[in-house]
Length: 114
Length: 111
Image (cartoon, rainbow over all chains, first blue to last red; front, side, top):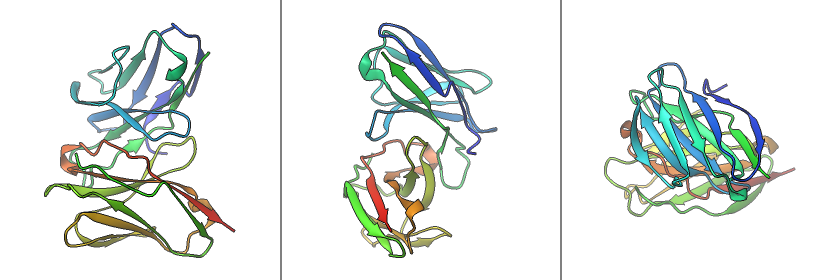
């Protein structure tokens, strides 16, 4: 158990819909990262937040947005969903004061768009 | 961020030592090298990290030559449960920007 909690674990929805994925980082971790992994593909970095502020942006579509709240949990909002958005979405957290900068990943949210 | 290149896949047999090499020709002075392991439908898990020479922990060793333009993850005596995808990342650990996972190396361990 990494200590990172993601909900929901599974989500099935239709094209054009909007969903929100939630992530609670490990206790004390200030950074949250979102990744997308399509079937048999590598991990695509989407976005990073640090203590509520956006820190880095990757290949995140304009239809996607994220935020980190004062209690440090984060939400990834996916709108106008397309079939190609079906993927595993991982959240990770890290402690910037840690020895290795290790990313701790949650178990992921599997999104299926029909 | 330094770009990394790894073999797409490797096969091995139980009990053998496996070495996976990662190329990172434009590694920066402050960059560290980190390896992660990922099982299907699970999030990646940290294996080992190093800056130069050799690092060893209970599961793997990491060899980094003096020019740091490559690194080799060594898994001693692999078992079937080591079948996974292994990712090499390069970046500044204290800046929290080890963000880019390449394609990884898919290791298949056979009986």
